[in-house]
Length: 146
Image 1 (cartoon, one colour):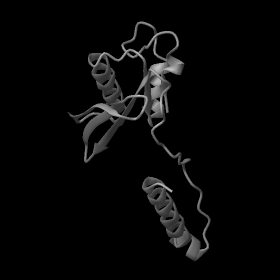
Image 2: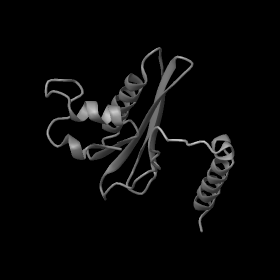
Image 3: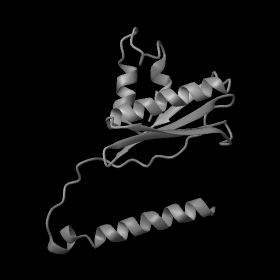
């Protein structure tokens, strides 16, 4: 077994054990999760394609975004990050994607899969009007994904 897989399993086991020791379980109260947790990991793009992984965050009111562009074998082509100041998380996610698209274009990449955990950003891009700066044009549903 590879070291990353061992670490992933150890973390999953620890999370499970912490869940078993939660106050809700000890006190016998019912806990309803508010949202579904989805494991997010890098997905290898098809041969001849690159992948952009982008993320945005807001901490203490200050936003930032960053990402990496990797080739079909997972080799790093370029990474980027930027401070954005006081903007919303959705704006940070979108700014990160836009910067990643520019980085990939500057590297000569024309076949790119965008991967992000922001369902809101994906929805905004997919549903953008054709004249909108967010619009990726026809076929964008296969271009942007979570």
